[in-house]
Length: 65
Image (cartoon, rainbow, N blue to C red):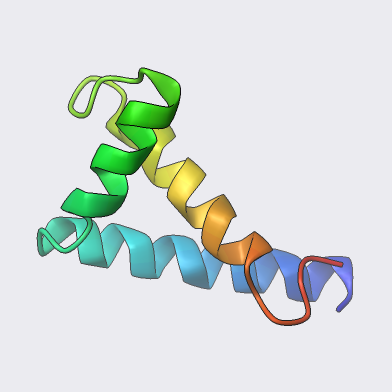
């Protein structure tokens, strides 16, 4: 994938993560990040959601390019 394609895919994943968070579907993922990093689930929510986005992006079959 090109850099532009990576950026578009990353933005789509982040939008999906934000949508899932607003529906309360990420609590287990958030707890995992809190345990791994020591971040606060509420105070550091933006950083946690970015980490979840990056993990999902890195897990793509083709991976980031």
